[in-house]
Image (cartoon, rainbow, N blue to C red; front, top):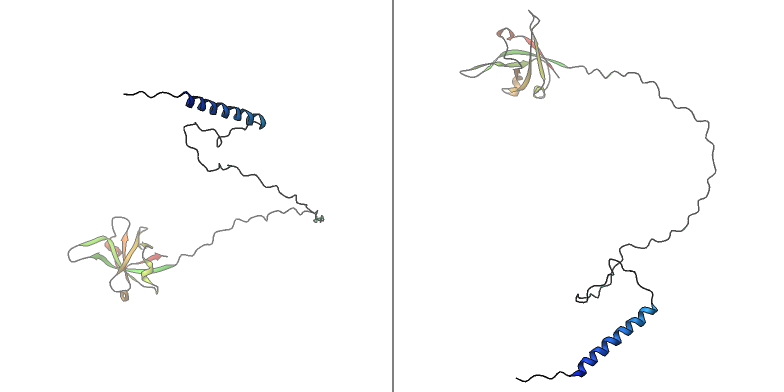
Length: 188
């Protein structure tokens, strides 16, 4: 095992190089004013890799605007300002929408071969109108002998379209048998 002899010449040359670099730095730093450090131009540690990309400036310099000359417009005098007063608003009555009433005669309860549904009825449309458009409209039946009324809603058409019959479902529990063959009103 042989030991390598250390050469003093290598140490001297590295020391001379470092001394030469430090004097060069001192000479350049005396000539130029000190630079301000910003976030983008902070010195990196010596162990970090340096990139060749130039740092971009975050804010662009505003371009100077050309001064605009404003020519004075000739002043035109307006006639004396009229005080604009709103016309007194009359309380406009909303258009009274005349309710179109279509007559319908109650024929029977709605039923099948074993049940009779007392809260639903079948009525025939007496007036000339599209009975398919009556679905969802209100039905009112007034009894002639008393002040009682039965209210309901048209739920659908019944049977063939040429028969012009509709189904009516009453709001309360049902209608009495006195309502059969009476004529009621469908409000459109």
